Image (cartoon, rainbow, N blue to C red):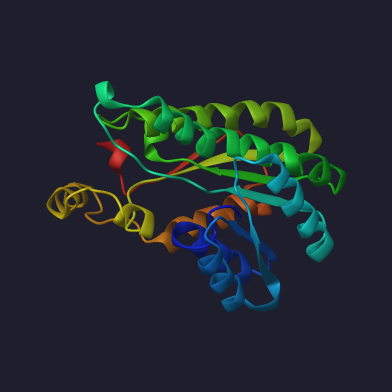
Amino acid sequence: MTGGARGLGEAIARRFVGEGAKVVIADVLDDAGQKTASSLGENAFFVHLDVTQAQDWSKAVEQCVGAFGPPNVLVNNAGILGSAPIEEVSLEVFRRMFEVHMQGPLLGIQAVLTRMAEAGGGSIINVSSTQGLRAMPNLTTYVSTKFGLTGLTQTAALELGPRGIRVNSLHPGAMETPMRAGSDTRSAARDAYFGGLPLGRPAEADEVAASAVFLASDESGYATGTALVIDGGALAR
């Protein structure tokens, strides 16, 4: 579980443990990650993981195997935000967004697939966004990389299905999480956006986490290459 220290990642980890799973919480936020893992008891532990570094992935998978056995679920949830008009987008920001949103999930898939396949298969969940299906202005880097993650998901599903591994993407709408709270979006604009949704409110992280549990479980056993949208009706408008 990458990006598991707080926000949606923490909510997913808590849901998984509540369902009886054993969870490796991976993040670059060491203090928050340790705190979350400790609060979940013996069925969770924390590892420092920079998703852009292959060696970190190798270490994390080996620690998982040593503690809990081969992984049968991978949740690629690490993400970052950033907005700017297209003429102001820097290559440095674009590269960093690409590294976290696409390079990270690719490295994660590569790190777990052999162990997962040998253990009989499993489920990989790539946490994307509604902006992985529909563009928005001033989000060039975010939208581009989330669209790319959707393509990576579908391609991986085609390749890994014969090996018993399902790969799906989860597309939450706007949530009030620590990552979003750190953005420069004005409260009035957020309130107007949420008020215009069919459900009239932002998602709770736990609501999205419930969908991750579904994609991880045998209940979604025939779903692969699927983009599951949890957005309060935003894309239906």
